[in-house]
Length: 601
Image (cartoon, rainbow, N blue to C red; front, top):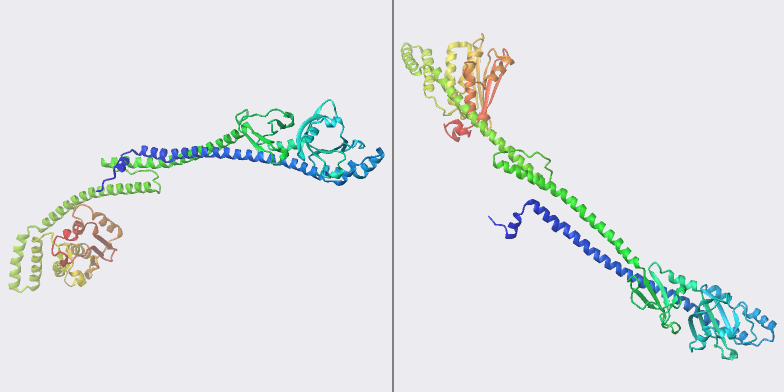
């Protein structure tokens, strides 16, 4: 026998409950928790990466929107700066106010209206000139001393750049006592040197609300600010010129994202700064945490419940089977009464129940067989005793019959001598009684001797016939299995008949069985009497009623057991038919041996 591998032998020694617990812990719970922890870490990293990418894209979008507005204003300034008619109107010296307004109404009054409609984020377009004959109004102003003191003028005159973008504070034209924040694009109008008698300047004021609105669109992701090259806040305008935080993180520890506003020289050094919302990342992580832990709970509890139910069913049935097998060691063969199921464990339980039922049946059969064997031995002893009692000192009778035979032969009594000879042969066979089986033809010869005696008794009123198949003649049968049936027919069936009396004996054989029938035309029996005789067949031989027929049946059962079929068929005034079926055995199958041994039981 192959011995199990070392580690497998160790596993085989672990109790079943511990095996189930280890399977659950190592193969279910620990892998699920490990996967959920790793999944949580990966999701947290993905959320952080996603939020950083979203913030970076928000900064880039805000910078693009702001740059689009500024470049739109610069483009507008180029359009105005290249208008030749504007230069001609502003460089002309007017004789009086009437002369100016004629030119204004004809050339300047509608000059800026299309630009204001096209660029909705432009608050105002102002053109300044040093021409003293120009009357200030609408979009055109004379460059006086007050204008020259404004920050935009100082910036445009102090720089060599063609375009300046700046944010500054100046007097509010509506309320001179307050100051207003401006976000302007200014440039010199010097594209046509031929119209350069008077200096001319263009100032385009952008709407602060449009710029702040573009930056506030990214508020769901972060707070956007625009800083000057000196890291002073430009937008939102409410914090204008306040110093920006110089650290890399905000007040709540959230990272600050920076992006240059653009590459043109007029915004060189300007930056867009975004400070992330403090709770946004934590909210996203917490939402992810709730989902992950809920998923972990479901993925743990559901498999745990299913595994518990399945293992409980497995464990319960295995333990029941184990307890019953322990009982079987003590010869207690109890059936396992439960719903065994259709799986492998159910198959084991069904097989165990079948085995227990078969063992119990075999035990009962052996016990019953022992009782039946003892009963049959007792019946055999009783049958032999009955036979011995019926011989009535056969030695004395045999010697007397021999003396009568000698006298009958001397005196020429032929019929008497034949009867005496047959009777003496009957007695001789009885004297040589044994359990050895004889061929059917020998048993029929013995029976015919008895019939000849009955023929002598009834003379012409009695006749008999044999109908024996050739194959049946050599079959082995127990001694005295036909003659008692014939004697019973003569005694009980034919004695009361006044007419012709007939006995018919038949025998035929199939592949496995021998059929023998004794039929008479006697007075017959009604169904009630037949049932009484059938009931007596298994009874004791202590009574003298139908003892011959019962003796034959008992000896056939003793030799062949359950393989004997015995039939009684009769009707009133229609005679009777007694037949039996036994296993067919020839002399070639075992010779004249004990039939019980020859037939195997």
